[in-house]
Image (cartoon, rainbow, N blue to C red; front, top):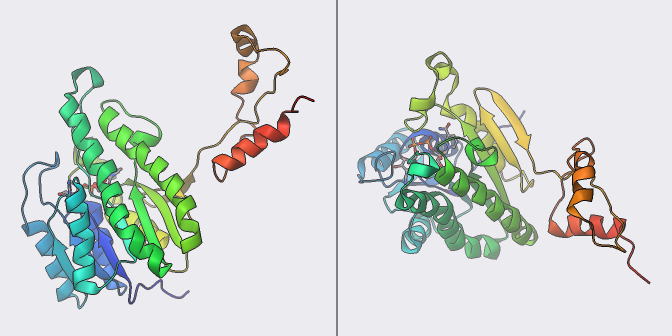
Length: 304
Ligand code: NAD
C-alpha cells in the first residue's frame, strides 16, 4: 500500500487552530502539503479572537519539518474568505485543496433562539464555506484541479434538538456540495462532505466520558485526507466518520407510485397509497436533478 501524498499541493483549512481542523492541518502537512492554517481564535460560540491558536499549529507544522502559514481572518465575511485564499496565493502561489471546517455553536431550542444566533451560524458554517470556495474556485478551474471538503453534521442530516441554526447551516452545505460537484466535474474539482464524530472543545459537553478516548479527531482526518487525495475523483459523497466508523450517507428516493394523469390526483388517493409512496424498499440515489426528472418522465406517458 503506497501512502497518499500531498507533495506540491497547497491546502487551505479553515478553523484549523483547534480540534478537527488542527488535526487535518497537521496530517496534510505531514504528507507534504503546504498548509494555510486559518483560525479566528475565538470561543466555541465564535466570539472574540486571538492569533495564538493558528500560530501554535503553524509552529508545530514547521517544527516537524513541514510548511505552513497562519491566517486569522473570519470566514464569515466575503472579504475574510477572500483574504484566507489570498494568503495561500501570496505565500504558496496557488490553492489545490480547501477544507471548509470553521464552525461555531450556539445551541438553543427554536422557541428560545435569538435570531442573531441563527444568522451567526449561517454566516460562519454556510456563508464561510461559500466565501472561501467562491474565492478558490476560479483558481481551481484554471488549473483543472481542486479538492473541496465541506464539514456537515448528523445534526443537519438527521436533526437534533436545539440545533435548528446549526442543522440548517450544515444541511445547506450539502446543497452547496451537490451543485458544485456538477459545476466542478469538467475541471477535475471534486466536492465532498464529512460528517464528523470527534471529541473537541465543541462536542465535549455532549460526549459520554467512556467513549471520549475513542473519539480522536485523527480518525476523522483519515477520511478527510482520502477525500482530498489527488487520485480520488469521487465527488458528491457524504462520509460519516468517527471512533473508527466510516460510512457513506446519501439522499435516496423511493420507487414511487404513478397515478392516472388524465385526472388530478386527490389528497384522499394520496392517503390511500401513502404506504406505497413512502416505501423505501426499492429506493435509489440519483446523480443529479436531471437524472430524477428523467426517471419521472420515463414513467409518465405524455398525452397524444
Ligand atoms: P472546534 O471548536 O475545536 O474548532 C472549530 C474552529 O473553528 C475553532 O478553532 C474556531 O476558532 C474556528 N472558527 C469559528 N468561527 C470561525 C470563523 N468565523 N472564522 C475562522 N475560524 C472560525 O470544533 P470542532 O469540533 O473541531 O469543529 C470543526 C468542524 O466540525 C465544525 O464545522 C463543526 O461544526 C464540525 N463538526 C464537529 C463535530 C464533532 O463531533 N466535533 C460533529 C459534527 C460537525
